[in-house]
Length: 420
Length: 175
Figure 1 (tube, each protein chain N blue to C red):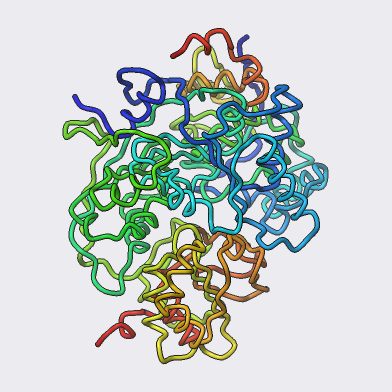
Figure 2 (cartoon, rainbow over the protein chains, first blue to last red):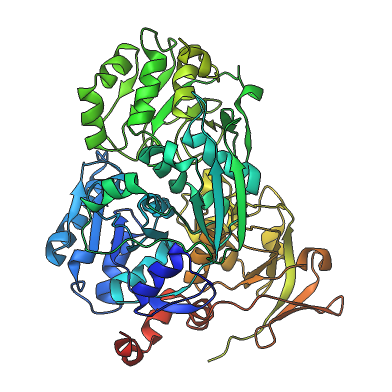
């Protein structure tokens, strides 16, 4: 029997000829990635030194740090955290990427999404590097292991394969595809597994749409997601790749825990209703619900195709008076391109509040809601209190629907705005 | 070093599937740092007498995919402060699982537990035989053995202890 792409990557990272799901191995991450956040990086830096007597990481080229949360700082404590991170980076000869955008996206732009590589982060949304055939796993506080040991102990995960077939209709986006996967398979369907996504629909999805889908894998219970990189993915990733690796691919006779076929041709826009990422519903059943805030951004969405379609919906129209539309491109590279294309001009003219890239709107540090307010959002998550008051609510929709809802002040289907 | 058996009463049964543990303290309290205060607010919306009735060593019982959502650490910090010694659930969400195992807090995946337990039943976790025993009802259920790294982490009291105990010589020998 053949092997999955995840088994092949982990076998190489463990220095073994082959590994199978269920085996427990010690694997060496090619990349160890983190953003600075209280309780994570500051604690890891301290524990490394105080608990393990390690003053500098070995092989600093394997490490990358991002400053993307609490940007810009609003308290001296936040700036202290960032300065501590910068100092640690200099002392360890580890790059600290700051004000370039959301780390999970910037990591791809900077070549950490090397096809065939194994990467770890504490945050599970790093799974989006799977777009390029990189196995990237969020391990929470276990990330300390990768700072103080060369190898991390890991049980080779089983893989569930999802074949996406068909082609999306206009106004329905990759964002809807992911939530449809959760709706179809369930929020526990891939627990502790790798979600491997393939099928003939992939070639019609942009790289950005694929990043969106892979970013959110955790809400199926998966520890990461991955795609076998096609020419489009390799063209993006190989010229940026930081290390020289041969891409690997699942064998046709690889062993999967389950295989599912999902046709996306008839898919309609979805809304994920608070307070759980498992509450996937048809948008049409919630159309008309009054909303007060719109957030277009995050590591999941906020890329060029999201900004372009929002601009298309909003062009020549106005955000409803009193409605707050926040547009936060996922990276500065994306923002620059959107600016060049005139996309930002259209959004600003329509009344959007456009800001430089930051994670802060997604987790309730900026643009927060008060009691009783409701948001339409392309953020990662809709749990209670995520964007402000515990008595506010988040409805997750695609980028076009955020724009349409901003015009109406109610949850709106974007498709009528995209006709003609 | 072997794990000591856990023996305690089922102090609460969370029968919700995909239970979001943040609900234990409530989202509005999730940023509380003071452990005593966290323990005071824990379960207040479900059972105001919870803190008074729970005893050292008691256990929690959960349904499928326990810990789904965006789990934070304070809820189980509060539970440990109240004396809870572990969680037995039908199954766990991976993010929650990793977080709590790193804290050295026992988590036991035991299919069938929910149908075979009532509140305050006395439960025993036998690590050697990988069974959960309901002493009150005189029945046993097998549980899924933990991955080696997770078991070693619990034995060592959490991630830090585990990393200290890893055999450096053996690791150096690996390619």
